[in-house]
Image 1 (tube, protein in one colour):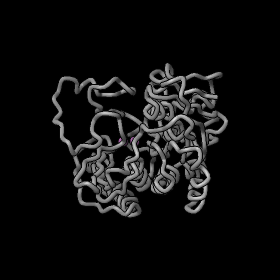
Image 2 (cartoon, rainbow, N blue to C red):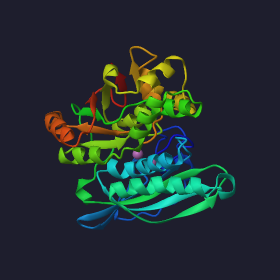
Image 3 (spheres, helix red, strand yellow):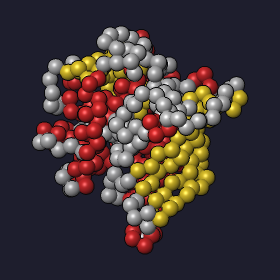
Length: 339
Ligand code: CO
Ligand code: CO
C-alpha cells in the first residue's frame, strides 16, 4: 500500500477504496487453485499459498515515489513499508527482491546506491535475504520490494475476524501523510522530521510478534487509505467500530498543519470515499486524521478484551508503543463511529 497512485487489484467485488482497480479485472478469468488460501478476494494485505499442511508462503509487492529527501532513509522507509504487509498477516519474511525505477543519467549512481543501501539495511534487520531485483529506466524515482514470507496455514491473521467487544489497537502515530507532504516544502521542523523518518522506518516486526503472542483476532496495516479506509476493510459490512478521538496518537506538528488546512491530495479522495461510512459528532481535527494517507503506518489490531493485559505486558518487553483507540461493536454494521 502506498501514498500516491495507490491502486489494488481486488477481483470483481464491490469497490472498497479510492483508486480501486477491481472493476478493471471484471470479466477476466482468474485461474482458481485449491492451494490459494488468500487471493484477490477480501482486500487482504498479502496473498497466501499453501505448500503443505503446515507451511504456506505469503507474498506481497509494494513500491512508491520518495517520501523523504535523504535517499538512504527513503530506501529504509520503502523497505519497511513493503515488509509491513507480511507482518500484518502474522508471517515471517524470508526473501526480498528490489524493484527500482530510476534514471542514472538524471540522478546519478550514488543516489541509487544510497537508496539500495537503506533498503538492504532494513531487509537485514527483518532477517530476510535479498535475492535480486529488477530495474527500469524512469524519470521519476520509485523503489520498493517484493517480499515472500512463511506462515503456518492455520495461523494467518486476516483483516477480517474482529469480534464485537474486541479492542482496537494502533501501533504508530497518525499524520505521516500531512508531514511527508509538508516536508517536501520544508514546512516541518528538523526535530519532527527526524522523529517522522524514524517512525516510518520502524519495522512492524515487534507489533506483529506481540499480536501473535496474544492471539489477536484480526489485523491490517494503516497505509494509503488512512485509518478510516483500513478500518473499513476490517469491519466491511459485518460489524461496526467505535473510535475514541481523544485517544488517537498523532504527531503534534501534523495537528498544527491540519488546523491551517494543509492536507495531501490523498486526504481528499479518502475523505470523499469514506465519509459515508463515518458517523461523527464533530468535524475538524482530530477527525481529519482518520483520512490522512499513511506511509509505512502502524498495525491496526483487533484484540479480545481479556487479552489486553497480556498485550500490554508483551509490548513493554519489546518497547512497543501502542494505543487502544476504540472497540468493535455489533451495530451499526459497516459504520465507523467517532466518539
Ligand atoms: Co501494500
Ligand atoms: Co497493507
